[in-house]
Image 1 (tube, rainbow, N blue to C red):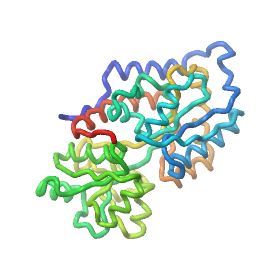
Image 2 (cartoon, rainbow, N blue to C red; image 1 turned 135 degrees about the vertical axis):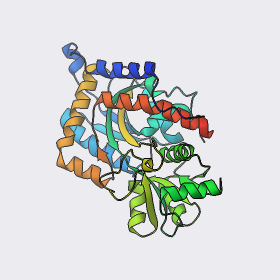
Image 3 (spheres, helix red, strand yellow; image 1 turned 90 degrees about the horizontal axis):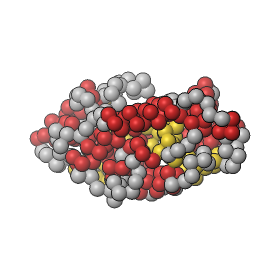
Length: 329
């Protein structure tokens, strides 16, 4: 089955309408007031990773600009669904927000009975960052290009393996989409975290890995791994010598991103103020430098861009999960 690439018209219209409502004409003054209590930012992943670093940086700047404590709370597990569920079940009063990854758009496909369809249960706030994903192999691997990987996989279907940081992770889905679009059979091997999958690569346990630049570049610089392609539509400025996989597999794009969202029903005034405060941080030199150091591209776009990304990505990953027969752990 061919994964669907575009959002359904009805779903896209609903999301964009919700984002537009969030920026509509101001409501009465009482609605303009930011919550007078501390705000928790739930990060549905373990501490210490790049999204955690970025979340704590933004929490500090949000506190300075909005006058209330922003407290980061890590609630990891089940691919990010535990932390997301904690936020969508909270009152829409601005005191519970989630900073999550592109898993926001795939959890509904992986856990269809948990009520986590972002088109229905969240208020989009802002895309925060793009996180480039790469295809990497060991430094001594026989593959030197994406076409060589495809040719080898076609010659020996199912022999070659690719690893990721977990079943249903963005990197697992990136690899599944690549195999589908390239018309090849690759065997997925799941590890507990992206760092473990990179270690497995240079230990010779797997042939290929899909990982973020944050996780892969240290191994490349250390001479343990080689990059074959990026999953963005075009080459990225940070790695101009690495081809986009789409140069070989037309139409292949697998974006990983970070985003802020809140429970469904946040007031338009709160959305406007939060989005405007985040957008202003694009001009802060420390913020730009820390995003770059974390291997990400700062976006801080506002609600409409996130609503559109959700509308595009949810049906895409539904198709990939269905076509690859992926089952959440």
